[in-house]
Length: 81
Image 1 (cartoon, rainbow, N blue to C red):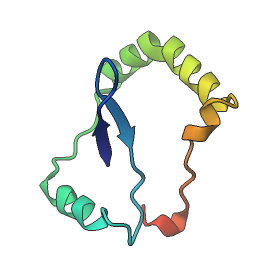
Image 2: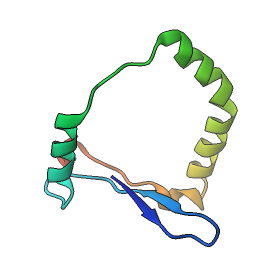
Image 3: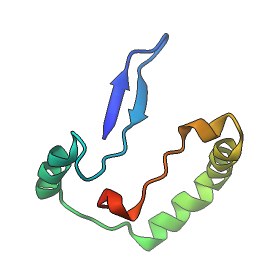
Image 4: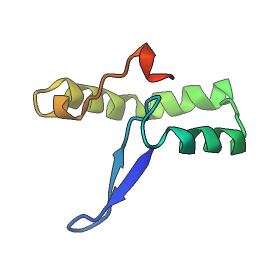
């Protein structure tokens, strides 16, 4: 789930992990029935990957840093997804 919070200059987005039995579980099941599942075209995916690779490496480095580890939530198989 996503959550929008007020920020100083702009809105802040947060992701909320949803696990089996959590308060949002029924909402997710409802959303699933309304979704149209699609797959990326391989050529377009490769183009996007080449363009974004540098930014992705920066994000990974941040999440591996002591400052970034606070944003990592580990999910397990028991969470239902």
